[in-house]
Length: 178
Image (tube, rainbow, N blue to C red; front, side, top):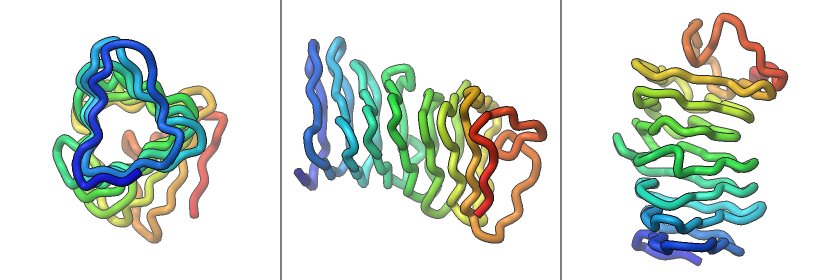
């Protein structure tokens, strides 16, 4: 389904699962004890922020496109997100990401992505696809899981050794440069 307004999960117990693709203005998870599952193999797109306040957002094996241009594009308590085998695509401009454990994370769109202070974990593939924009990791720590991979699809833009391009990368997923 598609809505021009926000999609809010305020359920205080049990799980509800999206069985189709969902498009909306924002996604708000604010139901202590409740879980919203994004389902299997679905693609969900939100033009506004994703706010993880209370309850759980279960990524399942779906893709969630976060297209807000905001300092709070992915906000709240990152521990309220269960990554599963999902992919989160940060596709807006100049976005900030709250510390969270992701499976696959794609930095797309234009403008720098800022990782808020704290630890963000990537267990799958971190894809850098936001062109010439330098991403900001001030105060942030990126931890790569043992099977993690790095994928650079940023065109001809220069990447220097940093948190984004570590000096030593030990993830078994390797490094792909496109």
